[in-house]
Amino acid sequence: MSKITILVVEPSKKPYVKQIENTLKSLQHEVDGYIQAVYPWDEPIALICDEESKLKNKPFNRALRDESGKMYDYISGTFIITGLGEEDFASLPPELIAHFSDLFSVPEILVSIGGQLTVLPC
Image (tube, rainbow, N blue to C red; front, top):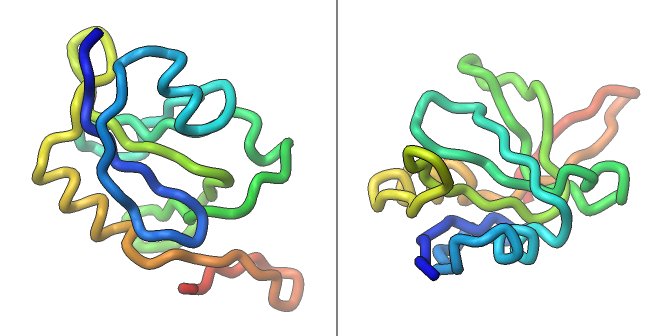
């Protein structure tokens, strides 16, 4: 079984690098549920989360923002970032580990202010 290097982002924590087996079971273990892969950026990466995290009321983790910095969605529960191979997930390259570690370096909280959802740094 081959291992891949991933970036793990847990609620209220700084991201960290981890090596895991490149299997469905390992991916599910990391996000604690059935995996959902989304591709919100141009880089060849996948953001993998629990597809039912919001339904399960898992804690808010991080906001996803558009190019102007406006939040368009958010991730609940732990998520991971992997690289993309030709047919499956792959190790996240060092330069992308650095980029996404920086992007998600500040834990966030989701609050409702005047009926409007707002994300604040922790």
